[in-house]
Length: 156
Image (cartoon, rainbow, N blue to C red; front, top):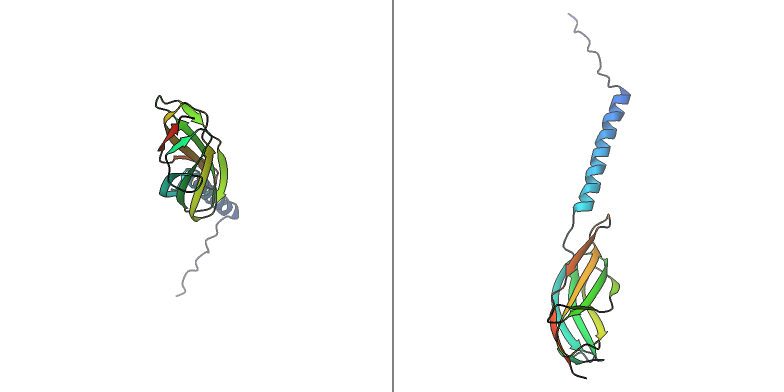
């Protein structure tokens, strides 16, 4: 007795191409979605301090003196950071300071930001600073606020 011969199964080439195209489009769409919504923490703050131009810790400044903010920030990857610092008085009025954009490498960096104390009425002010950075490959920006500090502006 002879065994019946099996016919080979043929898949039509156009159907196979269509199926592979759909799978590739679905995978690409998922990857783009993942990159656009995935964010990861990029900053880790090690310390933050206010000092004078000579490097001594200080929290009281006369108008026209230079105050320096020192931060140790650890970055998980190289990024460009746009800083937006300001002073806020007791009533909540915000006085913007000059911002800056820096590019920093992966790892721990000490960042210094110096500003001339503006001609504001004497009193206590809160130094606030927000940073904007690119969070992922697609380019969505993330916003982070640094811990605030208090400083005293002394009479002229």
